[in-house]
Image (cartoon, rainbow, N blue to C red):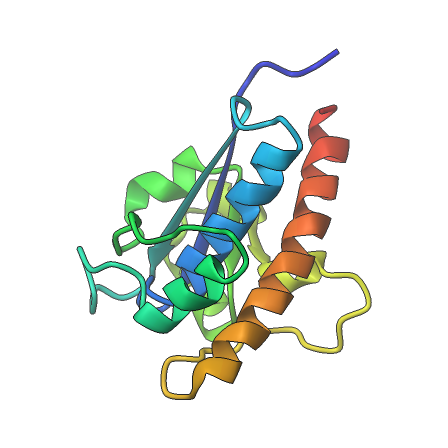
Length: 163
């Protein structure tokens, strides 16, 4: 039997213009392909307010578009206290943002915070690297990591929520 309660997922990086919007778009594509778009909500945010209201980095958009995913409509926002209570899965892109999230979260929400790449099987990396100061290849690598972790996350959600 399918659980009708929505499962809410948020991806978090520093500025919410590279890694986390890429993860939002890629994971949403996995969710839609699985026919679970009406059951799983997806969002993204940043731990810092550097880019609030801005679209994802052009290079992130290009990497996503090249693989059939449009993230151009997303806008950067900062994590707020509501997010800790509203989301079932709070996924940090790296150790620094994981630490910020754990420090800022109320104790009741800490069990929902995870390192995103913990859902990628057989990956030597433990963090999704920030491609902002690099070239286009970094965005392609981020996309590959995010795609693999998204598949693992969806498998975990389906298992944990009986979907």
